[in-house]
Image 1: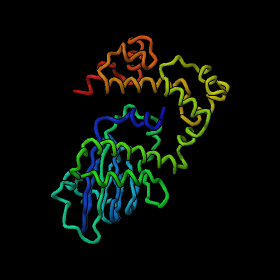
Image 2: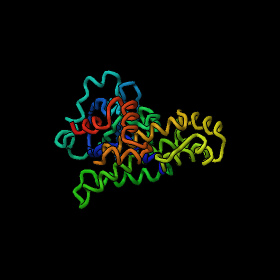
Image 3: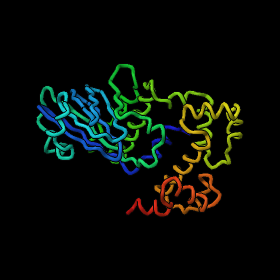
Image 4: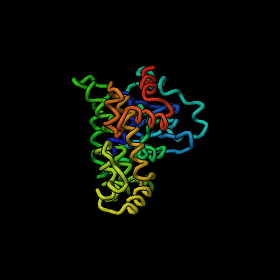
Length: 303
């Protein structure tokens, strides 16, 4: 069990996209809010980003910024005030190869920009806990694996190397994992790093994610991690934000939704895999949580 992988897999849909740009002079681009997560990496030079809620971030060479909730923002060559959005060019138009590309010059900025498609209906609380902006500045000796992923991505994006079509999506997924890891390592306000470092809570999460179909109860889970039910309930609820069995029900149904999205399996196959004795029991619980039946949910994915 890897809770970070599970948290990302619960919301990831489709394939990520990315583009590499070199820009110079005066420029300002606008990205509207979207159902996903976005990122920018500064490969060379510097720029500024400002979100709709007013958060301003200076980005220098090697810096990475993740917008995990798809916040609308402006990215520009200089600090962008509140009025910048009105004059900014739509990113989709601005980022066309014929628009920003120009002969390299002193003071140019090179960017790696991309998006991940996410299904907000199934956001894991770890992902929901991420702030609107995760800024990972380039500091020597910090997050070396993230720096390595950025270097590899910089070589692949926009290239015609053999195998790039396979390598690029995998590297983009790797970048997302490393950005979340870096946030967890640096965060002083989120409860999730504390949850994963608490031996009792981490062991309970491990057990529930490793085998969600097991016939768990508060007593059995407490026995598994070696504490009393009261201790487990108190520590788990404080750090995860939900009681153990409430979290288990949520996770089972989230896994069911993922299987409906990613497999052709019938409900009588999915139900026992996520801890429900019959398709009817799963359908009833699924409808209560998501407001639609599993069949309609699956049909809606291709509508």
